[in-house]
Structures are given as C-alpha cells and as structure tokens.
Amino acid sequence: MPRTLSASDMVTRGSLSPPPTEPTDGEQAGQPLLDGAPSSASLDTLIQYLVPTADYYPEKAYIFTFLLSSRLFIEPQELLARVCHLCIEQQQLDKPVLDKAQVRKFGPKLLQLLAEWMETFPRDFQEESTIRHLKDMVGRIAPCDEAYRKRMQQLLQALHQKLVALGQGPEGVLGADKPISYRTKPPASIHRELLGVCSDPYMLAQQLTHVELERLRHIGPEEFVQAFVNKDPLAGTKPCFSDKTDNLEAYVKWFNRLCYLVATEICMPAKKKQRAQVIEFFIDVARECFNIGNFNSLMAIISGMNMSPVSRLKKTWAKVKTAKFFVLEHQMDPTGNFYNYRTALRGAAHRSLTAHSSREKIVIPFFSLFIKDIYFLNEGCANRLPSGHVNFEKFLELAKQVGEFITWKQVECPFEQDRSIIHYLHSAPIFSEDGLYLASYESESPENQTERERWKSLRSSILGKT
Image 1 (tube, rainbow, N blue to C red):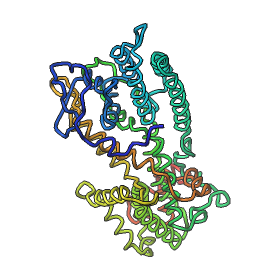
Image 2 (cartoon, one colour):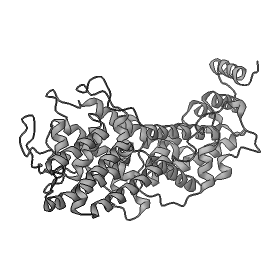
Image 3 (tube, one colour):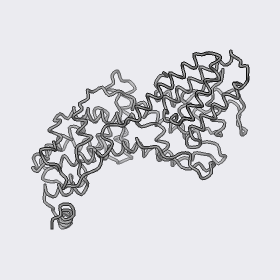
C-alpha cells in the first residue's frame, strides 16, 4: 500500500521535471508547474505531466492537485482511459515485441501512480470500465514481470475493501435527522434526556468527536470540487458528471441535527432549574470540544443555544453562570470573517503538526465555514484563462485547503467509544422549529403580543387546540 499522503506532500511547490515529450499549444518545454509562480497549461499538457515514463514520475503534489481539479474538465473514467492510451503509445506496449528493460523501469512507476490514485480517489474506480482499463494495462506489461499482475491484484483487493467501507455510512443516517412535531413528544418512559445517558461533559465531547471523525472519514476530497461544479465552457452543454456529494451533505445535516438536539434537550425539562442545568452542561461540553480541537461540534452547540426558542428563556438563563459561555461565543464570533476562530484553528493545526499523540492531532474545522471558503475560492478565480488554458495556480490553492482537510480527517480517534451515547446522539428525537417554540412558550409564557399570537397559532396547528 502507498503511504498516506500528508498535506505537505500534496501541496508543497517545487520545480516539476517535464516528461520527455513536447508540450502542446506553444508551451515551452520545462515549464514549471509547481514553483510558486502563476502558471497555466492546456488540459492535454497537464494530462501529459501526469503520465509516468521509464525516467519520469510526477510529484505527489502534482498528482493530487491535478486529480482533484481535472474532474472539472474531464470525467475520471475518461482521464484514466487517456492516461492508459498515452502509456501504451509512449512505451510502445502495442508492439509484438516489448523493450523489457524499458518496461521494467516503467512498470513500477505506473503501478505507483495507480496506487496513489486509488488510495486518494477510490470512487473514481467504481465503474467496471475503469477496472477493464487497469487489467488491460497490466496484461500488457506483465510479460516483462509477472509481479506486476500480483501487485495489481493487491491494489484491486485494497480498492474493493475501501469502497465497501465507504459504502457503509455512519450510524443513524436514515431517518434520524427528521425533526418531530411537539405532539409526537415521546412519553417519559421511552425518552431519556441526554443527562440521563451521559452526565460527564468531557465524555460527551469525546463521543461527539467520534461521530465527527466517523462522518468526516466518508467525505472524499472530490466532493469539494463536485459540490460547486459548473459546466466547462469548452465542453459543450453537457456537464462532466452528475453530482456526487452525499457524504458532504450528510455531514452538514449532522451539524443541523446537533443544533436541534441541543435546543430540544434544553427546552424539554418542565422546571427552569433543570433547563439551566442542561444549559450549563452544554457550555462545559462546548468548552471541552474547543480544548480537543472539535470546532464543528463546538459551533453546533453554540448555535443550538442561540436559537430563538432557547435564547428567549430569560428566567432560565438568569440561573445560568454565563461567563464561560460568553468566552466561547467570543471564540466563534463571526466578526472579521471569524478572525478569532481562524486564529484558534491555526493554533490547533500547528499543534497537530507537532503532536506526539493522537489526542493532540485532532482538528475538526467548523465545516460550514470551510465549505464557504472553498466556494469563494472557486467563485473568485476562473477555471480557465482567456487562452483556454487551465488556471493551475487556482487549483494549487484548492489542493492546499482540501489536502489539509484530508490530513485532519485521517486522524484516528484516541477516545474509547461509548455506543450507548453515540446511539443516543444519532437517534434521540428532536423537535422541529415550531415544536421548539411551543415547548419554549409552555416553559416560559409569551412576553408580548407577537409571541402570544404565535403561541396560539402553534397550539392550534400542532396540538389541535383553540
């Protein structure tokens, strides 16, 4: 198996030795693609730089950057077909007599490229046609060394295992995210409040981190590109592919579910002393999430506590020690494009790079903001320059951000898993927004005419009362 790529492997810029073929479209031989200067090239030239030869192998940074961005211009299956065609053409693998010495230098490099491709973008190999291309290529070079065929079998087995693992989504994806109305509130004998399942803030923060990392693990780097894909103006009217961002969307739904779960748990108790206790518990959980580096759960908890049905509970909040909450809110303040959060994230990222334990390596970014940053990067720069060349400099920056994310999502969670807590997080009923308002109004009476009218309307529509 190839070694796991780090962010520095994926995006470190250095001069890229050119392949031994002439560049196209008037580009100069030896044009640097990774030297830090603005750069561009035709799609054909970029594909050529991906293809290994007996004496050339592309940098890891280039492989990741191009495989990530190329799907904006060409389907991965078609790209693989073109890579295989170029390999056959350049190495003369269609000749009856092969140059065995040359093929023995080329073969390991081809297999290394395929291994890195399969490891980082396994979903590119789900089509049967891609497997046929792989088997055809190995069939052409195997006469020079039968070890190539065995190595390909190992790669295909590892690919199959990875695809099976990716196909098994996290617990509770189906049906658990749908909010319930207030009238379907389960009886006390069935519903257990979170504090009855877990009363230790640090333990809950650890289990939230388990959930976050498990869901992150299913998100492929290609989903960040596919989430914002536009039709390539040079590719006619047909988009490159259908959207495949299910895991990314499921992760955003998890964030929303956690927000509503926090609000539901706070609004559920009948007594304000109990509600205050739940709020203080979640403040402590959020603080532990911050210390761990789990910024996504931290923001979800803060967002849940700031929802209007919760924030209007003035009598409840009067009993809460809010100093720690205000500190956390300050850390996640959106002012200055989330300056405080970004500073904390950089600190966590630096800690992760110098970590001596898995505990110190954890970095789980506030995901919605991470997506927003990638969106604005995509919108702010054209994919192609007026010449028609691919704006490769843009994709180096994209690869830098996505590559960092890949490093973070590969961290193994060091905390012991508690299945009962995780099951509760995935399956506990959550109120809809109307349900939260109704629970809030019944906990603390409406304070003005607007709230009274809304309460009356909700009671009528949800509970069937007048």
